[in-house]
Length: 631
Image 1 (cartoon, rainbow, N blue to C red):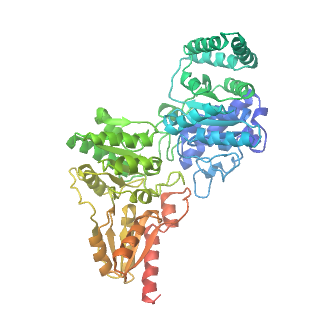
Image 2 (image 1 turned 120 degrees about the vertical axis):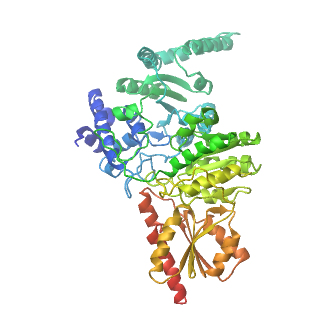
């Protein structure tokens, strides 16, 4: 595809030097490349399409890297990447060895702060602004945050702090949910362009100064004028909350009109040296009809046909997410106390069917994982059975709440950790490879991982009858293809199962590693080795009886987990063997080393870290050969 204007930008032409008509054509070029690329690689389509004009306007007024722009979450940064020297590499988006789908400091000097989780932009921007002031510099700092991320507690903590510090900082609220009529939008846009101009701003400030100079009544008169201004402003704009936090509120303004955006941003840049919040209305999926019609479906999407928008799918068993959601609906019929909770991930965690079937027992708390966990704890205090469905990587944000509010009190809260282990193309910020380690240290907490979808249903039933906190972790992607029982039998807490007898070596496998371990054992059997496989479905508590029995029957043990090795399942086995024996057994670990995992397909990453069948066979074979050769 041809993109002459974007090629000029890539070669160093400033966005601000383009005419308004050229900037509009640039927006069309950017959308064309984003749609074509994401159709092949998958990615966050609707969010990035929704901020194309906003990104152009920001680069025209606040050019990076001189000025600093922090993108909250960062899944809307594709246009930013295309405007900051990554046109040639954009075809590698989210591919192994290619550019990330999120801002990365190591990738470009234009990515001033790496993101991937929500609600962090204003805090980071406040730090950048404070550093600028301490160093005597004069560039601008901008935080771009979506309306969903504004539900994050950290965002409001940062707003409060910035308002207190009175920092020269611009927050752009990208609002893609609010609907305003054309007349109200046009009026508001006009008023804000006028009110942020030099003369009105100076007149406002001079008038307040004059009122305060009046003998005896000056301060009171200034306060009254402020109240009158707020009362009038409240008729046409919703920004009083931000004004009370110390920000000058500007908006709402249309987010796809370049002239309005650029003029407003210029006025904000030139007239204000204090906190300003610019409220921009955008449309997710803008410019691509399928994404405009169904922005949720095209928020994070796999490969698709760009001509029709039809997703390219291959026959596969239902995803673990789907199995969980369907099982939870069935359990809710049996258990009337069951409550489902999510943090702005109704579809992503498979809870949409539950929300439809049991709307009165479903809560979406927004991007507020800390609140979700403590809210669940409160429900559990009154005898209900809350299930918090959350991505593994996002539960990290509520570590203290899980520890202090749930585990310390021994409350029966179920944590359903989706996308545990290696998740693939979203990269380092989204891999769920830390949960076994950060949860295993918590007293009272049971941790389990199913080998397949049938065991997920059984473990869910187990969790709902357990009288304490329990975490179930399961991977992203399709299940194994086994039938899911309609009325699953619960499993005794802390019990493993031997799937294959050994004699020479046994693989103690967790969750997604179980079936690759079975395949590896069959391969080694053809070479004359007797390799057993144990489904270590409970990471805590360990099945110490079966562990001792397996160690007695096999001189070699290999643990396998999609988790970091530090503090994970293998570490738990080593700790137990060191304390209780047998001392003769040799234990080695397969898992994620002490590094952040980059983006790539799940298949490629499992191969890289030796967690597929071939990798486990190689590791086990070396252990067997070393023992045979006396090493």
